[in-house]
Every structure is written in structure tokens, then in C-alpha cells.
Image (cartoon, rainbow, N blue to C red; front, side):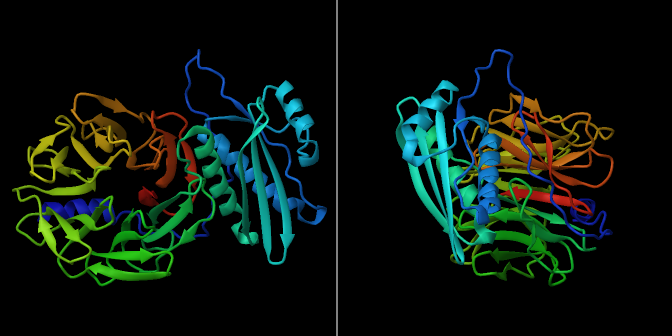
Length: 431
């Protein structure tokens, strides 16, 4: 038990000092590693959206947000230099863009009738001049960026058959106020919001598919699990006063939580049924078991245990309890998270006491191990984007505070997402 609380002290308590105004960086485009012989990406034409003079700036905000979202996905290049969008001269417009080798054209019209804007978006296949997407979005000034994100995801889905991530968010803990509180930010670092005011230690936010965030907090002077209902704007206790309760993850069907509890003789992993309120212990060893998370199909969990010595990554089949290690040689392993495709587990690991933490991938056989970060400070708390193409994590690579970064799933193109005073901990990407 003492060892468990040493782990908690190491993870939860450092750096509680620090305050300041929160800020988010400007949206940029980050290009990952591609092979020398990689094919050029198809080009989407995006001329300026049509709007009356008094709302040109709002139309430009929608255009620029949509453009950045499309570029971030790296399925397409975007060109703005070409014929203006003119619905009445559509054939000539598409022919002009065809000469510029554009594959698709996104045309936009923005109008305003107080208090709402209407954004009409049209996507055309330039070669066939056929429409492939047409939709109107409506909202007020404060919702323009969100509407652009939603539109970007729908367009990406239409053109590629793959889901986009523009309308996703990252939740995390930060101690800017002098306490660890839970925050949320859009995937691109914009729209930063503080969700809790527990004035204690709050961390480990974990999204469910219905948009709730479960997290562990010392709000009642004990490490309990609470839930944030973003739609209702309410925070409520879920598991309280049952000893240590560290949230690990939410089941894919949203009906259960997997978490670590010290209620038994050893820190063990439990499953909590959200419908019945019943707990079920699934590990019971003379060891510290923690950091659990579900597989995408909900049939397995991955977790950390020191049952064989130093903390390593394990996988358990829930129906049988059959457990096997995926790593064996790390000095320390922590915070494993299953990829949305189910093929990889990302985790933070340290190869010796003299090395900083880095981010690694391991496959389900334990035979393939890939290092994603190196020689860039200490890198921890990895979490997958819902499309499995990006990984968010915390790092002190700039020599100072722990900040929130995102990189490609191959470790390329790391970039800062949210530049906050204080340290950032335990991010989790929404579904």
C-alpha cells in the first residue's frame, strides 16, 4: 500500500504552484513524414466564400477554419488561387479549376439574419462537374468555428470514407490555478475551457462516447470518481468514499468503468457497472495493478502491473481472466491506451532509471515495439485521436513546464497544442 501511495505522490502532487491567464496557440498546419516517392495529395479548391461586405470577416473565419481542418487531416492539399466561386457560372468555375488540376471544389455562401448565420457549402467533383456534397449549417457568431469543424468532418467522410477529427476535443488536468483542475480544448488548441473548480487534485479525465467526462478528484478529501455532464452543465459523484478510486476508462458501450481501487488487500483493478452500481474485482495479486483501459471492442483491457518486478504492460481477456505481458524489459511502464483500430497499444516507458520517459507502441503479440519520441525531454500520458492517426501527450521538451502536444502516430510532426501556465497532466481525446 505504501508503494501505491508513493506512485500517487509521484504522479499527482508535483508542481502544484503556478498561476496565470490561459492561452491557446494559433491554428497551424503540421506536415508529417512522407517517403521521397510519396504521391502528391489531391487538391481541393477553396476560393473565398461568398458573403455581403458587412459579414466578410465572419465568412473568412468559417473559410479559414474549414481550410485548416482539411489540411490537418492530410488527405488533401488546398488551393485558394483560382477562379472565384460563382453558382451562376458553375461550369466555367469548375473548368477553370480543372485547368489548375484541382480534384474537388468547395464553394461557400454565408448569409446573416439576426441572430444567426447560414453557411451553405457545396462540394463538386471537378472532373465530372457533379455535386458530391451540399449542406446548410446555421448558428450564431460564437458557433461559427464549431460549425466549420462539423462541416469539415462531414466533407472528409464524404470524400474519403473516413471519419474526421475536427469536431473532437482533448480533456486534461492542469495546475495553473494552484490546484489541479480539469480543462477541455478543441483538437486544434482553440476554445479552451476550465470545467472544474474542485480546488483540490482533479485528474485523469476519461471521455465516454455520450460526451460525459469521468475523472478522479479529491473534492471530498478522498480520491473519488466524478462525472461531468457537458450537455447538462452538471458534475456529480459516481464512486465515493470507497478508498482510492483512480479512473482508467469507460467501456465502449458506456455502461461500465474500469478503475484501480485500494479497497482490497492490494491495489487492484475493478469494473463498475454504471447501471447497477455494482463493482467487480478482476485482478487480485500481491502487486500493484493500475492504469487500465478498454480495447475498442470492450472484450479486453490493458493495464500496468509490477507482479513480475518493474511495472510492465499487460493485457487481460475479460471473459476468461487470461492475462499476458506485452513488455518485459522496461524499468517503468505506464498509462497504456488501446488504438481505435485495436492493433497497437501506446504507452509511456522508461528503459532505465537514468532515462526520461518516452512514448512507445507495442503490438498485441508483444513482439513489435516502436519508439515514437527520443531526446526531447520527458514524454508521458499518451492518448489516441479517435481516427487512430494522431497521439496527444504531455512533455517538458522545452525545458520547462509539462505541456500538451500532438504528434502523428509514427512520432512525426510533434507540435504544441495548448500553451498554459502551470503543468498539464493526463490528457484524453474525445471519441
